[in-house]
Length: 368
Image (cartoon, rainbow, N blue to C red; front, side):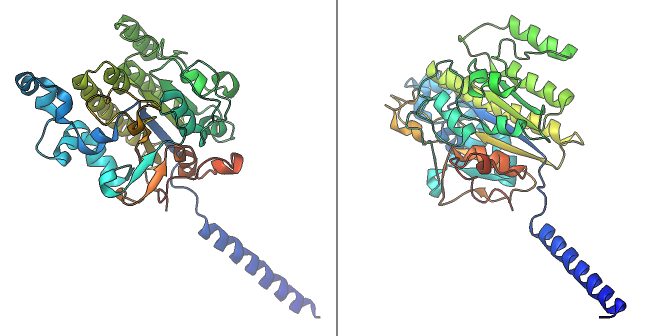
């Protein structure tokens, strides 16, 4: 074999290898998403998400109903108009540009798999990707499971860039802050490690607000703490747990339950628009919205949840981002809350199930 012929074979082989490498790269392009913002609204029923205010839950006194501020703000002639009035950003932007799961009228069902249908088991399932019978109460016991947040925080590109803020003092236990090292406070104060003047001002304001519920601060200081974190610390993964929807429902205050859902929608708009105005996040950030459990479906039990309230199994979820096809309200699909964990990872191109094989798969169709 001549030297020139051997060289030609070598060159041709090299070109073939390069072509294979290029083809492999083309087959698996990098994720369009670099960051994920997750916002959960505790115990927000699918009935309000997809149908808006429910008239029978305003009460029985017709004069009091029609004269109430909540009725004037949120009651409209059609379910579509009512849901748009209650959650305008959700329906004008998230549903239009992303995907929403859990509307029974479209043959879509989203449900819990833990069989308990209350908060800690719901969040544990949502973030670990699998229901665990050891998480069977709202007691302050560290989560025995590795959540997707802890797992991502252990990867080189995310270490120290996962943040959590929550309107419930169980947050540090849900993410097992002692083991995971995640900066998770109990909401008292909203910013556990204040670093800016605005952080300190948020904590001071929160201290001046009335303590309405034990262990559950109001949502506004929590969201403002998250906004300041986004502005100054630039996390790649941010989870904000809002809780007033659940608290006001337990108080049987349907008017304030609706108002808290409306304000949560406004908070979500604010954090999304802030992200889109920042170079690190604009065009490369996904949004995941979900709830930890449902509630009763009747006038007698809408304030409740748990295994004795069968309707509380039903949940909902939504995803929006540059890599998510705009399919709107999904039809004829059944999903579980457990799928949220792998979804958060999949959006940024990571495979949570490789580390936790028992975890549920990502929500279907949320990435191209």
